[in-house]
Amino acid sequence: MVERGNSPASEADSEVAQRFEELAEAMVSEIKEGDQSEMESFESYVQRVRQEMISEMEEFKDNFLQGYEIILSELAEKYPSAKSGDKSPPPGSVRG
Image (tube, rainbow, N blue to C red):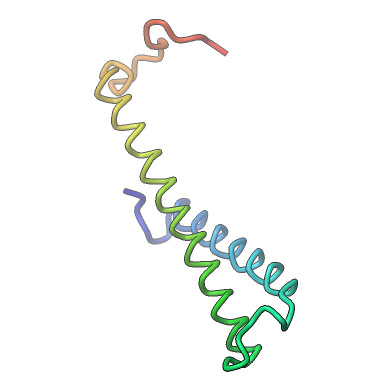
């Protein structure tokens, strides 16, 4: 899993979170008042929608990273020589 702290990964996570915030703000600015219930104030509606969007984007990021880690793990199992520093491509691969 990705380590947290003062690592480049945590800086990237911080940048991704900032981008999520910016995207949510841009999307919320497009919301029309007619899209919310009359029982809920527009401000609370905007906050709720914003939080839902950020939560969904975070979930996507986590799922994407988990899938990437699984792929790397499978490749490491299939081609253990690549892990030991062998720079040659796996058999059947195409060099780019």
